[in-house]
Length: 161
Image (cartoon, rainbow, N blue to C red):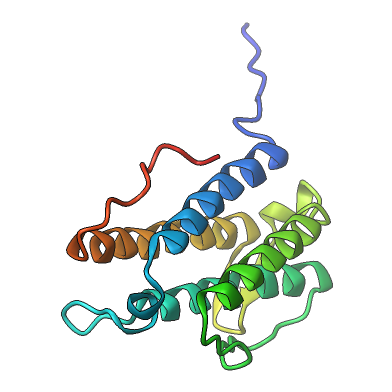
């Protein structure tokens, strides 16, 4: 009779490191934008990249805080209304610290628990976190398209340092 042992594919520390790699790349994408185009440029009626970034800022840190505190908060991006790239970069960096802090407070066991994110999305916590990462990749790809349309080479997607 053979026994099977289950090994963990990835540790929570590795998942956070992977996510922060994506955040580093998104930050570099943000840095590549000229100030005016960051707020004004759009293709085919899509939002400006600054509005996409405000969405990302409004989701990750506040969601992790809700998960840790086990409180359901409605989604709200109205509290951050930047007018400069410097403001966005500063807030991005602040949220990186928030993400690091709250992520590390989620126990291994809790990743399997169902959580009703924003009172609308009832999924296991790990799926919510994967959504945060997927959503960021999606919006960063839109930012890459904008940069290319502006004649600016985006950062290489595999360089996440």
